[in-house]
Length: 191
Image 1 (cartoon, rainbow, N blue to C red):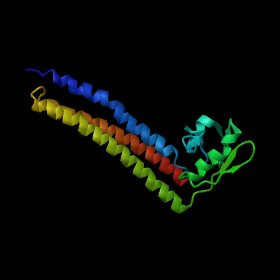
Image 2 (spheres, rainbow, N blue to C red; image 1 turned 90 degrees about the horizontal axis):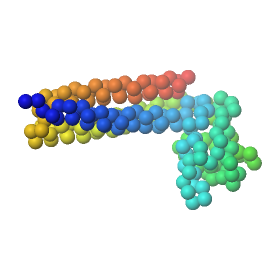
Image 3 (tube, rainbow, N blue to C red; image 1 turned 60 degrees about the vertical axis):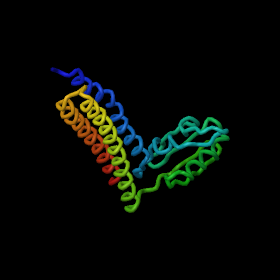
Image 4 (cartoon, rainbow, N blue to C red; image 1 turned 180 degrees about the vertical axis):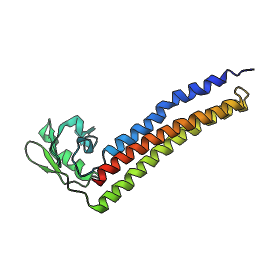
């Protein structure tokens, strides 16, 4: 007799694909903030600023531009936010020293030293591994549900085997996507 659950594990996997994709997106966002010696607005746009009792991101308080390859210019809409944004930058792990005037904040990105490149590469790989761990946890969660269904006789052993194979394909695809993101960023760091 064909189990009704044989299609349910596919539905379950498809429903959880958004969690797998979220892991890849998380890595993409995390590594965007790792500086490569070139200025990029994503380096500062998500920094949190304590502004008038609220926690806001820099991108919610200012216009961020890159007028030169090694310069980021932050122009707050409220000039009173300049010292608050400066403090957020100084407190961040970016290691940048902001300079400000009445129109905004200028960040000059220094060239990377070899030690900083190695440190950023290590951080990059750590972020990638964290995302892969999240994906494996999601895979294990799905497999537990299918295993419980097999124990409760609402699914067959074949469903479990097929779910494992399907999930492995999803994990392999996700790992490739994450590895590609890491390789691109490592290339940027090396140049």
